[in-house]
Length: 276
Image (cartoon, rainbow, N blue to C red; front, top):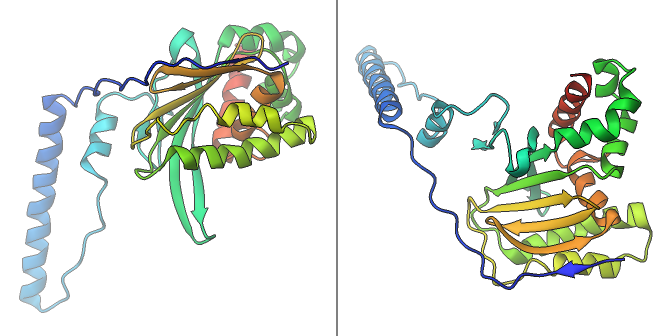
């Protein structure tokens, strides 16, 4: 049985994040100035000796340097995009791993679409899994396919936080991508008769929603296998379906995840939680 609920309120914009403090900016600018002086000296020396002028490698953008200076916890920054995730989400869910969703255009150009963080309720993990897996070592749990299968199957509250990094992403592209990826998982776990369930999910992403760079989408499995979808902190729909919840989570921690390293980190942290 599928139950739908679509709030009609407009999606609010999040307030701007506070900028880095003055000390961090000053330190960064001072380092940049020192680097510029060194580069200028190297250029003059090379010219006077008649040698080719070396070209320094491009440095990381200023905002990336400052984001780490602001005190982000280790493991909470997606390294290829510099996107930082809080170590805890709403309702106390703990960050288990971060990753990157990439896609390709015509099989040639690779595009970073969004960074994501996977969160889970620690008490739920222990309640549903600790008794079964307490006899296994942490190293055994890190390699256990059955462990991840149980995480997908049980009523464990999990949130996947998506932060858009591609500045030209449209809501239509999101619908199309989810229709393909979630649709394949629905067929994998539920067979052919899943079109209505898939349409009930992709219909949540209406044309009125805009997704500029930095926008946040949350896909959360709540109690009783209710999938809650939020955009920019505003709930835009909820669907009760164990099959749909499992299919979406499989994209991030299943057999063929979007980011294998992220899935491995999630499993490693679940293993640590169950052994604590």
